[in-house]
Image 1 (cartoon, rainbow, N blue to C red):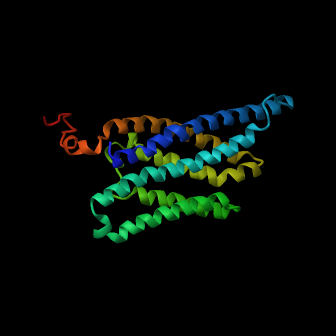
Image 2 (image 1 turned 90 degrees about the horizontal axis):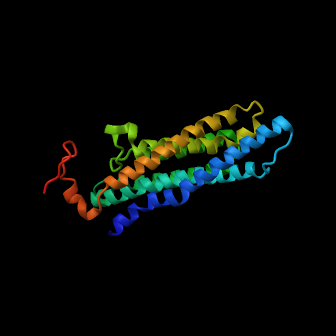
Image 3 (image 1 turned 60 degrees about the vertical axis):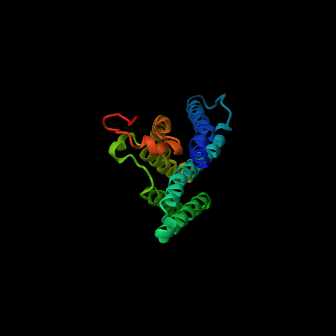
Length: 232
C-alpha cells in the first residue's frame, strides 16, 4: 500500500477502534440509566449506581462529537486526494479554498455548539455544523452511491451524523423539561441512529471490499460492473 491507501484506512480504523466501542458503552449506560429511573419510580430506590446517568451524558457527548469529526475525516480523504489528482487547486482555486474554509467553519461551529448556553445559539451552531457537512458532502469528488441510495454508506452516515448533532443541541433541554417530551424524542431518535450505525458497519465493510488499492484502479475500473466481467 502507498500513502494514499494508508490514509484511506484512517476513517474506518477510527470507526472500529473508537466510535463503535463508544456506541456499545453509551447504549449500555443508556439502558442502565433507564432501568434505574424505572426502579426508583416503582420502589423509591435502585441498586444501579447513580453515576450511570452522568457517565451516559459524558460519553454520549464524546460519541456525538466523535461521529461528526469522523464524518469530516471520511469526507476529507476523497475530497483532497481527488482535487489534487484533478488539479482543482490550479484550475478552480476558488472552490478548493472554499472547501478548506467549510472544513474550518464546520469544526468551529461544532466547538461553539458544545459551548453554547442558550437554545437559540445551540440551534444556530447545530444548523451551521449540519450545513457544513452537507455542503462538503455535495462536492463532486464525493461518491454518494446515488443509484443505490437506500444502501449508501454516505447517506447512512450523514443521517446518523445529523442525529448526533441534534442530540448535542437538545441535551440541556432534556434535564429541564418536566413533561419528558425531549427525553422521549432523544430516545426515539437515538434508537433510529443506532440502526443507521448498524447499517454503517455493513455498508462500510462492503465499500472496503469494493475499493481497490490505488495501483489496481486502472485495471479494476475497466471492469463491466453491470455484467460482472473484467478484462483479462
